Length: 177
Image (cartoon, rainbow, N blue to C red):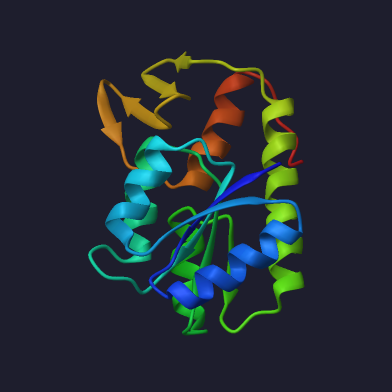
């Protein structure tokens, strides 16, 4: 049973999503502000987080940025505003998927299962390597950080994954796939 953390200030929506996901075989926990959500995501044993953008204390983008510094937890972002730029920003700072409100609960479940499937495949494909060092670059899988000459470089989740794949096979041609 997959454990899902729901971080949204709309308690009624959290209850509805939680009920639906429970019926679909997920175990859920809900929190209602960004600060508490970040703490729960970092300290809990969750397989995935559903994160609202507009919340009190810390907005969803700030939660995601902080989460990506310390965790690779898959995140699906929700927003009441369907604006393209907001979705692009969310995906670029590390969201795995984005769903505008209102949404079809069946689509939510399908997207969650797809994210979990990709995360599961990624874990199976990658042997756990703690640190990779090539020339002046050092990549740490546990902290998802990259250093050049000892100085930490800011990278997005996608950039980290790409750099990890390239460094793992340094000196060889890597296929696009």
